[in-house]
Amino acid sequence: MTISMHSASVPIFTTMLGNLSHFIDKATADAQARKYDTNVLANSRLAPDMLPFTRQVLIACDAAKLCVARIGGIEAPKFEDTETTLPELKARIQKTLDFLATVQAAQLDGTEARDITFAVGRDRTRTMTGEAYLKHWALPNFFFHVTTAYAILRHNGVPLGKTDYLAGNTAS
Amino acid sequence: MTISMHSASVPIFTTMLGNLSHFIDKATADAQARKYDTNVLANSRLAPDMLPFTRQVLIACDAAKLCVARIGGIEAPKFEDTETTLPELKARIQKTLDFLATVQAAQLDGTEARDITFAVGRDRTRTMTGEAYLKHWALPNFFFHVTTAYAILRHNGVPLGKTDYLAGNTAS
Image (tube, rainbow over all chains, first blue to last red):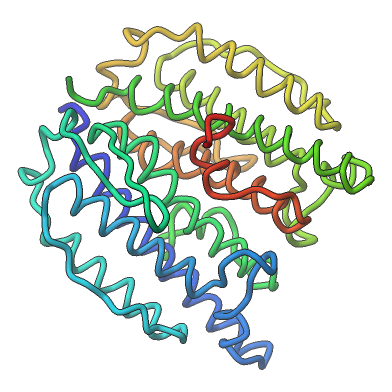
């Protein structure tokens, strides 16, 4: 069984979005234990000109959703980006997972050489083959936002470790 | 042309390690412009119990090297982890890139179902198939350390943006 466009995308996104949801559970527990408002975490940033935790989560969700939609030529559900609280972010992750679960391998497989054109910034587009787009754009971008979300929580003292990042709530 | 174990590993590691080296160039330029010692960046962390920039870079390098070595059953060169300065970190990245360039596709391809056993922590091992190891362990771990290195620099005000992360010194 060789790696396919589906097997190199949907299972990775699904696992890591589950882990991201697990980070939020641990963040919520930490806020209760240390008696602070979880909105502080939701609005936290690593630098004044970086995006806050809420946006890191929303972009990670959309990176997964849009990657799969673009590769497969699938119309993705539109979400309004109104989430501001940790429970709302968990719900957004779940909606994204629900969409990913509807995507069949046959919709993505065999698209390695298909041209994918996507928006970059406000007024430009970029075109890459499906395989290059997945490997050199969509996956790096997705991991960037999941890791930055993790880093924001760790920077604020949420007790997360590498096994939470790699294995989520299945971590031993 | 379907995705192979080589095409899903070596080109991604090579591109992103090049981008990581580019982050260091920008960090060096920022230190010169703002007149601070680059060792401050080398030793910077996002949390007191997270690893500093130096270790993030070394682990990213080793994540790439060890992934390829394990999948292919290749003996990887051993490096001593003595790097402490930004120029030394750039040299370590280059040594890793030099090793990756020696790896032939035929050494990695067809290893999707091969059992890979690797150390986890000090006294445990874990076994995964080659494909699962690449997708759910090696790549997430690699991106974690590249992104955390980026985040440490951004947290310290180094003027990096997403195009530096995704496209390195080819960013327009």
